[in-house]
Length: 207
Image (cartoon, rainbow, N blue to C red; front, side):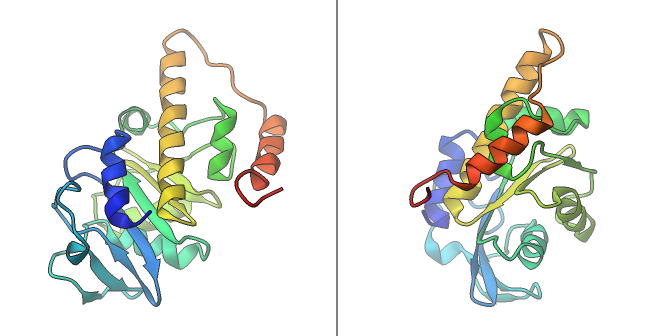
Protein backbone atom coordinates (compact mmCIF):
# COMPACT_ATOMS: atom_id res chain seq x y z
CA UNK A 1 0.00 0.00 0.00
CA UNK A 2 1.39 3.40 -0.96
CA UNK A 3 0.57 6.87 0.41
CA UNK A 4 -2.11 7.56 -2.23
CA UNK A 5 -3.92 4.32 -1.38
CA UNK A 6 -3.39 4.98 2.32
CA UNK A 7 -5.09 8.37 2.07
CA UNK A 8 -8.18 6.78 0.58
CA UNK A 9 -8.08 4.15 3.34
CA UNK A 10 -8.07 6.92 5.97
CA UNK A 11 -11.44 8.03 4.66
CA UNK A 12 -12.82 4.54 4.04
CA UNK A 13 -12.00 3.45 7.59
CA UNK A 14 -13.48 6.68 9.02
CA UNK A 15 -10.18 7.64 10.61
CA UNK A 16 -10.46 11.25 9.47
CA UNK A 17 -12.68 13.57 7.43
CA UNK A 18 -12.08 16.27 4.84
CA UNK A 19 -8.39 16.95 4.47
CA UNK A 20 -7.59 16.23 8.12
CA UNK A 21 -4.67 14.03 9.12
CA UNK A 22 -1.61 13.13 7.07
CA UNK A 23 0.61 10.23 5.97
CA UNK A 24 4.28 9.80 5.20
CA UNK A 25 6.76 7.13 4.17
CA UNK A 26 10.47 6.93 4.87
CA UNK A 27 12.75 7.28 1.85
CA UNK A 28 16.51 7.29 1.47
CA UNK A 29 17.81 10.25 3.50
CA UNK A 30 14.31 11.63 4.01
CA UNK A 31 10.57 11.04 3.80
CA UNK A 32 7.65 11.52 1.41
CA UNK A 33 4.63 13.26 2.96
CA UNK A 34 1.14 14.35 1.94
CA UNK A 35 0.66 18.02 1.06
CA UNK A 36 -1.36 20.55 3.01
CA UNK A 37 -5.05 21.01 2.21
CA UNK A 38 -5.54 18.58 -0.70
CA UNK A 39 -8.37 16.04 -0.55
CA UNK A 40 -7.28 12.41 -0.37
CA UNK A 41 -9.77 11.58 -3.14
CA UNK A 42 -7.91 13.92 -5.49
CA UNK A 43 -4.36 13.18 -4.36
CA UNK A 44 -1.80 12.13 -7.00
CA UNK A 45 1.85 11.11 -6.81
CA UNK A 46 2.94 14.50 -8.15
CA UNK A 47 1.27 16.20 -5.16
CA UNK A 48 3.45 14.45 -2.56
CA UNK A 49 6.35 16.36 -1.01
CA UNK A 50 9.81 14.89 -0.47
CA UNK A 51 11.67 16.25 2.56
CA UNK A 52 15.09 15.54 4.03
CA UNK A 53 15.73 14.70 7.67
CA UNK A 54 16.75 18.29 8.37
CA UNK A 55 13.28 19.52 7.45
CA UNK A 56 14.04 21.01 4.06
CA UNK A 57 11.91 20.40 0.96
CA UNK A 58 13.83 18.36 -1.61
CA UNK A 59 11.06 18.16 -4.19
CA UNK A 60 7.42 19.19 -4.39
CA UNK A 61 5.00 21.67 -5.93
CA UNK A 62 2.91 22.08 -2.76
CA UNK A 63 3.47 22.90 0.89
CA UNK A 64 4.00 19.78 3.00
CA UNK A 65 1.51 18.89 5.71
CA UNK A 66 1.72 21.28 8.64
CA UNK A 67 2.63 18.27 10.81
CA UNK A 68 5.81 17.40 8.89
CA UNK A 69 7.92 18.10 11.99
CA UNK A 70 6.07 15.43 13.97
CA UNK A 71 6.75 12.90 11.20
CA UNK A 72 10.40 13.93 11.04
CA UNK A 73 10.86 13.52 14.79
CA UNK A 74 9.36 10.04 14.71
CA UNK A 75 11.67 8.92 11.89
CA UNK A 76 14.66 10.35 13.73
CA UNK A 77 13.77 8.62 17.00
CA UNK A 78 12.39 5.26 15.80
CA UNK A 79 14.71 3.60 13.30
CA UNK A 80 12.13 0.87 12.59
CA UNK A 81 9.50 3.44 11.57
CA UNK A 82 9.02 3.27 7.80
CA UNK A 83 5.62 4.98 7.73
CA UNK A 84 3.69 7.45 9.89
CA UNK A 85 -0.06 8.11 9.95
CA UNK A 86 -1.88 10.94 11.75
CA UNK A 87 -5.66 10.64 12.22
CA UNK A 88 -8.62 12.63 13.55
CA UNK A 89 -10.93 9.74 14.38
CA UNK A 90 -14.01 10.22 16.57
CA UNK A 91 -13.54 8.01 19.62
CA UNK A 92 -9.83 8.69 19.96
CA UNK A 93 -10.72 12.37 20.00
CA UNK A 94 -13.22 11.87 22.79
CA UNK A 95 -10.31 10.65 24.90
CA UNK A 96 -8.09 13.41 23.50
CA UNK A 97 -10.63 16.04 24.57
CA UNK A 98 -11.11 14.60 28.06
CA UNK A 99 -7.39 14.21 28.74
CA UNK A 100 -7.59 10.43 29.12
CA UNK A 101 -5.06 7.86 27.99
CA UNK A 102 -6.36 4.54 26.61
CA UNK A 103 -5.92 1.62 29.04
CA UNK A 104 -5.94 -2.14 28.33
CA UNK A 105 -9.62 -2.49 27.43
CA UNK A 106 -8.92 -5.19 24.80
CA UNK A 107 -6.02 -7.51 24.02
CA UNK A 108 -5.73 -6.06 20.50
CA UNK A 109 -4.15 -2.99 22.05
CA UNK A 110 -0.95 -5.06 22.24
CA UNK A 111 -0.45 -4.18 18.58
CA UNK A 112 0.85 -0.76 19.68
CA UNK A 113 3.70 -2.44 21.56
CA UNK A 114 2.41 -1.83 25.08
CA UNK A 115 -0.59 -2.18 27.39
CA UNK A 116 -1.91 1.37 26.86
CA UNK A 117 -1.77 4.42 24.62
CA UNK A 118 -0.64 7.50 26.50
CA UNK A 119 -1.69 11.08 25.84
CA UNK A 120 0.66 13.94 25.02
CA UNK A 121 -0.21 17.45 26.27
CA UNK A 122 -1.80 19.98 23.95
CA UNK A 123 0.34 22.21 21.74
CA UNK A 124 -0.51 24.26 18.67
CA UNK A 125 -0.56 22.06 15.57
CA UNK A 126 2.56 22.03 13.45
CA UNK A 127 4.88 23.17 16.24
CA UNK A 128 8.16 21.69 17.36
CA UNK A 129 6.76 21.45 20.91
CA UNK A 130 3.96 19.18 19.70
CA UNK A 131 6.41 17.01 17.75
CA UNK A 132 8.81 16.63 20.67
CA UNK A 133 6.09 15.78 23.17
CA UNK A 134 4.48 13.31 20.76
CA UNK A 135 7.75 11.36 20.69
CA UNK A 136 8.29 11.76 24.45
CA UNK A 137 4.86 10.43 25.43
CA UNK A 138 4.89 7.73 22.77
CA UNK A 139 7.75 6.13 24.68
CA UNK A 140 8.63 2.78 23.12
CA UNK A 141 5.17 2.26 21.62
CA UNK A 142 3.80 2.82 18.11
CA UNK A 143 1.00 5.24 18.97
CA UNK A 144 0.25 8.29 21.07
CA UNK A 145 -2.92 10.33 21.58
CA UNK A 146 -2.52 14.08 21.09
CA UNK A 147 -4.60 16.11 23.55
CA UNK A 148 -7.50 17.96 21.90
CA UNK A 149 -6.17 16.90 18.51
CA UNK A 150 -6.02 13.25 17.45
CA UNK A 151 -3.68 10.29 17.13
CA UNK A 152 -0.34 9.54 15.48
CA UNK A 153 1.03 6.06 14.78
CA UNK A 154 3.99 4.49 13.04
CA UNK A 155 4.72 1.13 11.53
CA UNK A 156 6.88 -0.88 9.18
CA UNK A 157 4.54 0.12 6.35
CA UNK A 158 1.62 2.42 5.57
CA UNK A 159 -0.69 -0.56 6.08
CA UNK A 160 0.68 -1.36 9.53
CA UNK A 161 0.48 2.28 10.68
CA UNK A 162 -3.12 2.44 9.40
CA UNK A 163 -4.03 -0.88 11.03
CA UNK A 164 -2.67 0.35 14.37
CA UNK A 165 -4.65 3.59 14.06
CA UNK A 166 -7.80 1.59 13.31
CA UNK A 167 -7.17 -0.72 16.28
CA UNK A 168 -6.67 2.23 18.63
CA UNK A 169 -9.91 3.77 17.35
CA UNK A 170 -11.75 0.46 17.92
CA UNK A 171 -10.36 0.13 21.45
CA UNK A 172 -11.24 3.78 22.16
CA UNK A 173 -14.81 3.06 21.02
CA UNK A 174 -14.99 0.10 23.42
CA UNK A 175 -13.61 2.14 26.32
CA UNK A 176 -15.87 5.15 25.77
CA UNK A 177 -19.00 3.05 25.29
CA UNK A 178 -18.21 0.70 28.20
CA UNK A 179 -17.65 3.74 30.43
CA UNK A 180 -21.27 4.79 29.91
CA UNK A 181 -22.36 1.62 31.74
CA UNK A 182 -19.91 1.93 34.63
CA UNK A 183 -16.23 1.29 35.22
CA UNK A 184 -14.78 -0.84 32.39
CA UNK A 185 -13.04 -4.09 33.29
CA UNK A 186 -9.43 -3.88 32.16
CA UNK A 187 -6.97 -6.63 31.25
CA UNK A 188 -4.20 -7.16 33.80
CA UNK A 189 -0.61 -6.13 33.11
CA UNK A 190 0.45 -9.78 33.36
CA UNK A 191 -2.03 -10.83 30.68
CA UNK A 192 -1.07 -7.92 28.43
CA UNK A 193 2.59 -8.93 28.72
CA UNK A 194 1.56 -12.35 27.44
CA UNK A 195 -0.35 -10.69 24.59
CA UNK A 196 2.73 -8.66 23.68
CA UNK A 197 4.73 -11.88 23.40
CA UNK A 198 2.04 -13.50 21.25
CA UNK A 199 1.88 -10.50 18.93
CA UNK A 200 5.61 -10.85 18.24
CA UNK A 201 4.84 -14.10 16.40
CA UNK A 202 1.56 -13.02 14.82
CA UNK A 203 1.20 -12.50 11.07
CA UNK A 204 2.38 -13.91 7.74
CA UNK A 205 5.86 -15.41 7.73
CA UNK A 206 6.03 -15.66 11.51
CA UNK A 207 5.85 -18.76 13.67
